[in-house]
Length: 205
Ligand code: HEM
Image (cartoon, rainbow, N blue to C red; front, side, top):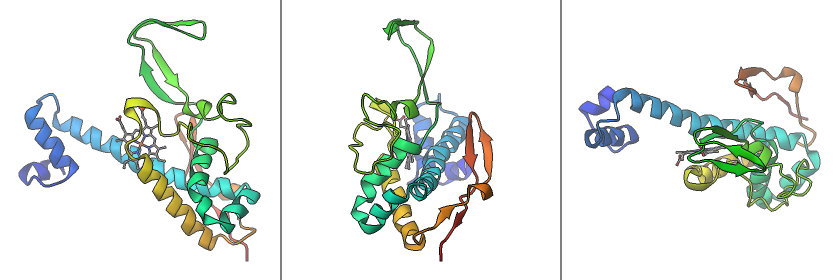
């Protein structure tokens, strides 16, 4: 695709990266391939998994599911709360210290890597009372699923909309009493995570 676009620049991301390459020779063809591959994962895999997590989590919390089913205006905050509650595990974003500093009594040296566990932050009881409870009425403004600061997720609002649409559409087919068939679900190891390969649901008749 990069070779094709070089011969025929258009209004798209790969063409823009090729234009940038002309200005900055540090960016070579492999960099463009790697960047676009990472973006595909960051954009599509996350939202895809997020949609699955949304539906699964609500099916596992029937009272909350009933509230959303009865009042779909609750979907936007439910999407945020489900992401806070169920998305992301113990891993997190890598950061490297640019200087020595103290963090809760520990000295962090310049150059050391820190893993910022977004899942842990999302269950911080000082920020979210009763953090282990799924509560779709909760104030979710401090949730950190989309990161924080200068690298805050560029697609956060799009991802929220997409997951809300998925949930809305799923509610049309998930009749009351439908349940997750965890025994039929398949998982694939992904680092320290288990990535679900499917979402098996028994639709109640
Ligand atoms: C549920 C879906 C998503 C989740 C959980 C998510 C999560 C995140 C997180 C945590 C970061 C911060 C990374 C860091 O600080 O190192 C990030 C950055 C980013 N996300 Fe998302 N994301 C999602 C969907 C999307 C979508 C749909 C797009 C684009 C359409 C997108 C584009 C980006 C980009 C370009 C960055 C890098 C921003 C930067 O470094 O300045 N993401 N995302």
